[in-house]
Image 1 (cartoon, protein in one colour):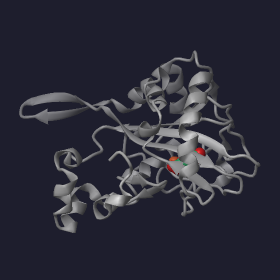
Image 2 (cartoon, protein in one colour):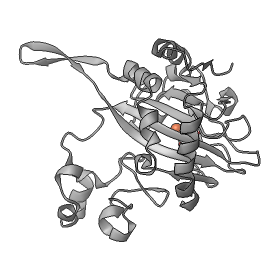
Image 3 (cartoon, rainbow, N blue to C red):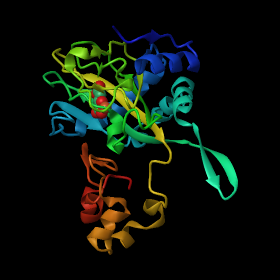
Amino acid sequence: MTLTTLTPDATVDDLYQVIQRDGGVIVKDFLDSATLASLKADLTPALDKVSWGSHEFTGTRTRRLGALFKHTRHAADIVLHPLYHGVAERFLTLATPVWSGGSRDEMPANMQIGTTQAIDIYPGEGAQPLHRDDSVWHWRHPEGGRQARVQIMVAVTDFTADNGGTRVIPGSHTWDDERAPRPEETVPTEMTASSALIWIGSTYHGGGSNSSDTPRMGVTMSLDLGFLRQEENHYLALPRETVRELPEPVQRLLGYEAAPPFVGWVEVDGVMSEPIVLLKDTAAAPSGS
Ligand SMILES: O=C(O)CCC(=O)C(=O)O
Ligand SMILES: [Fe+2]
């Protein structure tokens, strides 16, 4: 079994059918070569400045750079690409029937950008533990009944079986929560630079080990269910100086604590950090905030 690769003239429906069946799909030549070169030029200097990760999950020979909209205008090209945006809409913007008084309405869902990261896996990095990305919200399977996330990984360099190309378990999006993912069940994402892997939050996957002699660079982003957030937007409503004056337990309840495992992280110098650090030390705040 390998992942299916579609050509850029495929339709949203073609992508949707393959992802429904396998949990993920590769789209060849997702970005044109000029856009890819410009994306790489934008991100490389910033990536070169961040430190190695320090956990098994984020990798110790891996560099991660978040807040991509700050670093490159091509982040917008990725998220608005008709194939990615279109297939994410197919999975996410389903309507839910709700009663409001005596009227039964179909309430549509929208989407939000959930996570943005450039991920550079260097030679010597081991395989990332296999996981489902929707476990960040403790999503249950199959009870969740719908997808919470549609994710993309754009290959900035070629992705191969031995340079850390993302390992995916085709079909695992249909598994229940008791079945453990096993490395032998994975297939490598093998794709040429500028191609993209698109997969859903319930598909088991993980970064591969890099036994080659060059780094593997990818840009990942997710479109998530728009309602997976706080009802009131405290981050925009309350100036940071106001929040700094509040008792720490209140700061945490307002959202300056990440929800386990790590929802709400903010990147500080390449480290996925607890948002509370932004209140404690102004020097540690990401530039531009
Ligand atoms: O780097 C990769 O190929 C996958 C990374 C990933 O799945 C993650 O960090 O959640
Ligand atoms: Fe992941």
